[in-house]
Image (cartoon, rainbow over the protein chains, first blue to last red):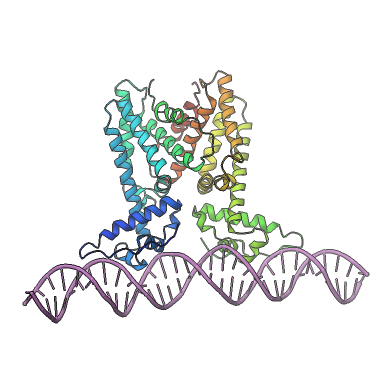
Length: 207
Length: 207
DNA sequence: TGTACATCAGTGAACGCGCGTTCACTGATGTAC
DNA sequence: TGTACATCAGTGAACGCGCGTTCACTGATGTAC
């Protein structure tokens, strides 16, 4: 895991900030491989990028800032994946399916990144004073609420409380995303059976 | 967190194994407080118990063994809490409610312990070769399956696939348990609304 | 076109720290006679 | 009842390691004249 990479060629003048992206990418890779945020040490990141450890301080004030950048990037990627998946459909039920499917896909392909994302809270939510700023993920969640409401408006869902239903769908998706990754030996039922229950039945979608 | 405790009096002859329980208790406390299994260091545990670090080696072969013992104990506690809650009821729907409620209660009162429990898998499931031994938690899960089946047999649930329904209920409970702890600033709907959806609606319980 | 120089991108050595683990040990406790 | 002694429950010092961070530095790159 901690194999030393070949040293990286020095950036040209004015291109120093390219290193920042490389650092975030390396930290993300380590997180994905180890699944342990404590393994994303400053020195491990530096080794992976192929630079010396102090070079990181030109771009990040401390180790913690690297992790925050990693999670901000990951959260942005998640939002993008959701938006893109939803926008490929027009039927409200299909949009709901696509969004929930993309959510589970993201978690399946980057399980450790996904886990740490919600364990620490996007954009370091944990350390924010409560009630001061709304969570960055609220936008994403509101898309889900709107999706369920759209189904109800189109007569495709029996939902009368889109917010509560969306909450139920979300927590179920989250639990499924995590447990599927953590317990691969569990005798999971076919994926579409679980998906139908937590993404459609909880949303009140009529068959 | 790492405050030095008063040194602990030496055990009497033949009572050396009492220290083992104290070590597990201290490690559990550190895990509950920090929520980070990496914080459960051998030396931190020793400080907390009030002994020197090498004393731990009389009871555990290495640091990892302490964590395994902590999680085995926690898993046992969870099973006990579930069994006890279910056994106080006779009506099948009430038993289902009680079991799911006890599950969420356990996670709410010991959020970090709960999280690490499923993140590492009970009894070190992760390191077991796949398919060799069934997960220890399968018994607990089968109780849930049986509970849903009992509701269906009593005509109180429309479930026709208790296993798949139980899976959906479980992942939803898990997601709710985790997210409620991780994102306390989220504008959660009233708890019973979420509970009804993920514990009853997913189980096909008829109102 | 040539050269002095400021700036930029990054380095190497060092610091103090807490860690897991090992080793030889100590001193109180109970027991055999 | 008294005493020698084996055993038990732990200790203190030390090891090598990787960590985050600091410091003074270096050498290539581009620019001003």
